[in-house]
Image 1 (cartoon, helix red, strand yellow):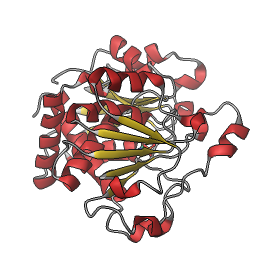
Image 2: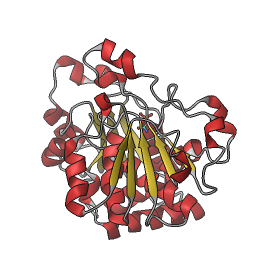
Image 3: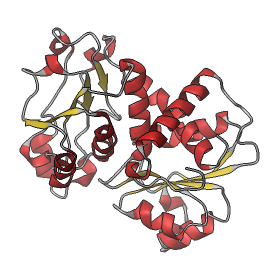
Image 4: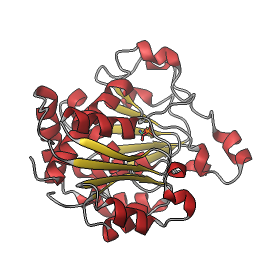
Length: 302
Ligand code: CP
């Protein structure tokens, strides 16, 4: 992993994924406040973010490193017409690692090809969000005690939701059974279903999950990605299609945990927050340890 960019979750083997999760557990158990002394990390966010940016910045600060960057490209020379290439070539002079969120699919790959320092994809359009996936895996491992042979429900916007695309690819290492719950307009893209077919993994597609919720080990709820719709009326039709409520959890498995990459809109009712099966805020905390592990591994410090 040393000096390598992280663009897609498939950049890491199963063994490398497990290594990152082990290092995350080490950071959670034993903070290392001086590990990044003298290191500078750039965060370039061309799209809004709360958790990804702030958990990366918290991760770096808690390891003793420094952050430079922008949270809104309109405050940078991007607003004067500077290209992504020129921005990346410039910022790679100022830092040891670049963390990039960008609305265009493929932008992180392109940035990694022109950068002098490794690039970490913090979300590129509807494509991939590999660091979210690593914190999702860490959360699943912590709550289930294993990543193997789980029944995972992916619910909501499976078309535009980059987190479910990366998670599917990563969980394919662990003999997962996938249940896809979405309206037909937001189904999992064929390329991901073909990916599972080629690996001989099982997946099932549903338009509702109330009747089958008792089978789930993990329910991974997602927000309908309003910003990816070209027609606002299409968004209005599907925006509240699934709402998970506390009463629906009555006959679910004891080990069930509810995950969500957040932000949520209406898809998890606030009454679910009181359930011990609600794990999404701890999941967001796990992002700090996991992102510490990613940075330390790429910088060759772990
Ligand atoms: N999960 C996630 O990517 O959240 P943010 O958009 O707040 O970073």
